[in-house]
Image 1 (cartoon, rainbow, N blue to C red):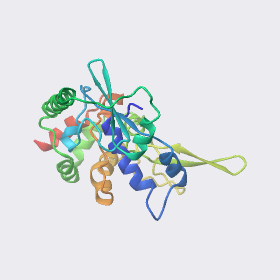
Image 2 (tube, rainbow, N blue to C red):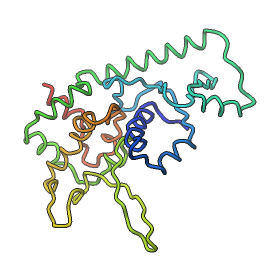
Image 3 (tube, one colour):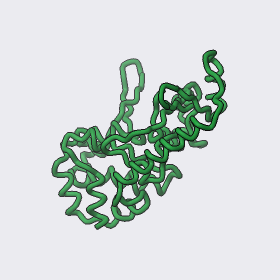
Image 4 (spheres, rainbow, N blue to C red):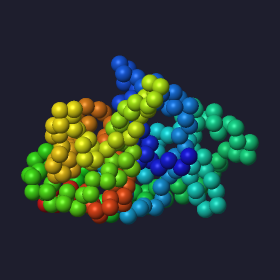
Length: 248
């Protein structure tokens, strides 16, 4: 409940990965079937939100239900059949009548889009970012990775990152533990080789994965513009500054 639109967009990529017809993840599939996604329309932005620069809206049309706060009213927007079945459990709801409230919602949506677009002015779109990254030289990766402490916060807070380790527990139990490409040793193999041993290469790997490699394999995007990786970064690395520097 309260899932912002950027997180709902992130689920689309995870669905492509874990619900692939040839490699269905039964555990992920079971959880998705038994989960109702109730999103929350955004009417204000956080410091680093930039969903509109990647073509997304600050509200979702792909959740099951959406909660909208207008004045002292709570509006439930039904999106899916699952959402409709869930909403039928509420006896205190009544159908919305009158165009005034709908007009207020549309106006609030438009104002939020304008605010987000102005804040992200100059930021290249998703496809352009991928092209810029492919042609980026080593110096920019050295520059921005110099403040990276390899904590993995950017990856573990991301709504589209999904790398994990398989851990063997006693009794032949296997569990999945979240992993991050920014951790030292992420690609280290049994022979000791590690193609991402050097920090700038490891740092670059995450951006290439999000803006080049995953778009080449999946239909959904691997960055939804939530900006949480910027907020979570201990080294105060702002990926948007990196992209705008490349775009100059």
